[in-house]
Image (cartoon, rainbow over all chains, first blue to last red; front, side, top):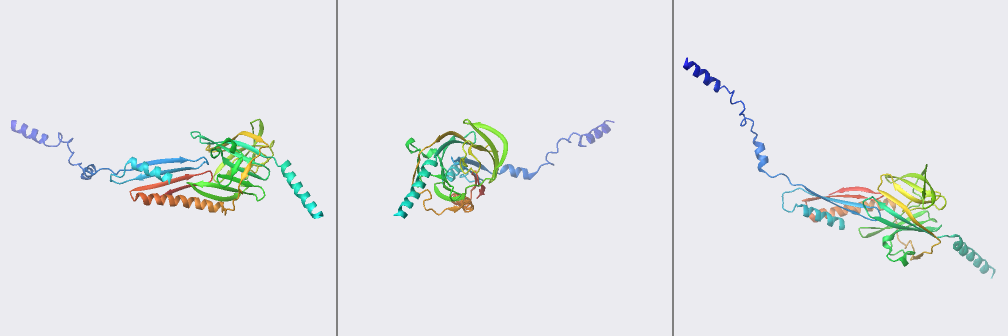
Length: 86
Length: 238
């Protein structure tokens, strides 16, 4: 009787009832890990506007999208300001 | 002797007619270019044969208020004899001269009225180069003129605004019988571009400008130029 009870108990324990909330590894997506490892694309935008007494309005929007250190908000805004002046 | 007398008589008649009947006006307008921007002051000097429209910001001294120098000032010159207007304008420091028709507007009279500076005004609307404008004009000053390029109504335009709320010209001062002095020939012997050619040149100018900036900063940066005037709207991407 004891043996019978032990066999039934073991079968129940290993049937997956208690393990049903543990399927993390089965849902694991390796591509997600890859995305997390690389840095996201850096897009910086700066707009400068100049208005003139004759009613004209010029806006320059500078966008940079690279991973080099030259793409900063300061650099984009400086380029936009210079583009308006030249 | 008789011929000389007739010549002198004609000369004196023309001279006196010009002096007596040609009344010079000065009208000052404020130009409201969006509510959040400073208000600019403009001046319209005119008589029955010509008119000059210019920004008062260029006139530094009070003594120069009646003094127009065609070589130095930026202005719009309307000439009744040729039925043309001549624009002397600046584009990022580069001077352009172009001519346009004098009466560019097809007005539709509407029933609104308004009193501006004690003048009773009637209203009219027009569509012009992408915008709709409403103007208030007074027949109490029966001169077909107005701020900027506007004109073509049966009286002086005292207020005009675009229906998008972006541009408004309002008269703030009217002085009759002023004496203004014009230095240098207003037409300057320039070759004037036609309006359509000027418009093409305007767009090319900004395209070149965008290309130059792109070349200067290399491939890492992209430039978008958005240029809007009362008559031209253009977007350029490099």
